[in-house]
Amino acid sequence: MTSFIYLVKRNTKLFFKDKGTFFTSLIAPLILLLLFVTFLGNVYRDSFHSCIPDTIEVPETIIEGFVGGWLLSSLLAVCCVTIAFCANMIMVQDKVTGARGDLTIAPVKASVLGLSYYISTAVVTGIICYITTGVGLLYLRQVGWYLSAADVGYIFLDVTLIVLFGTALSSVVCFFLKSQGGISAVGTIVSACYGFLCGAYMPISQFSEGVQRFISFLPGTYGTGLLHNHFMGGVLKKMEAEYFPKEVVDAMREGFDNYLYFMDNRVEINQMYLILCITVLVLIGAYVLMNLSARAKHGRV
Image (cartoon, rainbow, N blue to C red; front, side):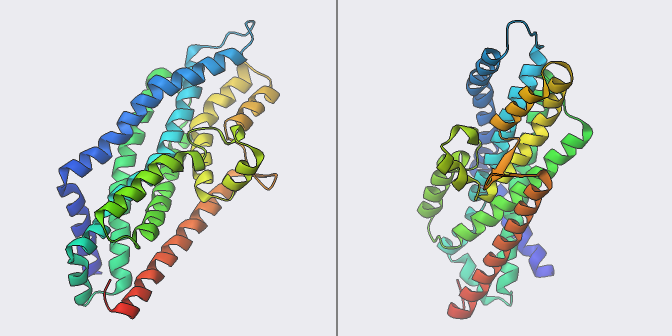
């Protein structure tokens, strides 16, 4: 246990010691938040206004709460995964510098070494994503706040689970990388593609039926769905109670991925949590086995 704690501290300190990487990882989601609110926000506001009959007056706070909830949930769903790939570069860097070879010579189990990278990456990613979540909640507080205390608690739980998922996914992928160029290339690909594949950049309902079915098999989709539900649930309930018929609000839930389907069956929120938790455990188990197998085959990785 002492060795494990030491390795976690060592890996975490190495990431924060590189000020350029840390500030880039911290500032990137905040810049994305600004861009989302400034540019994509106008697109969704215009779409919302175009759907409202002239006879119905809806307060701007309702519209801002709806649009802000969608944008923030989408941003966090992506950042929790992409930042994990950036934070996991310590594992690849140790291979490049030979530090990992030195660590494997020491009397440290391969599983302990592998898990130390996982935990330190999760800690770093969590810190950055929690800061981004806090800034996002402050923004919602200013423009349109319809979240309950339970919603906020669930949002932080969702962020935690997606961070664990993103860290596990990046650990499995980065295990095979042995150069800085490799991790940079993978990080670029993940940043470019993941948002579309998890339904963050565009509602899944906008894709073709075949693409929708494919996306329904990806665990990250359900992490995004959880955030959509908890960021937008309060404002949708307000709409249903005071402004729109239930059928209209259900259509909004359908169109903005509050309702997700697998093989034409709606996936409930507790099922989304179950899918995400099982995926995290499977990926962590695979990652540990990969470390043990490599250690047994080569003696060092």
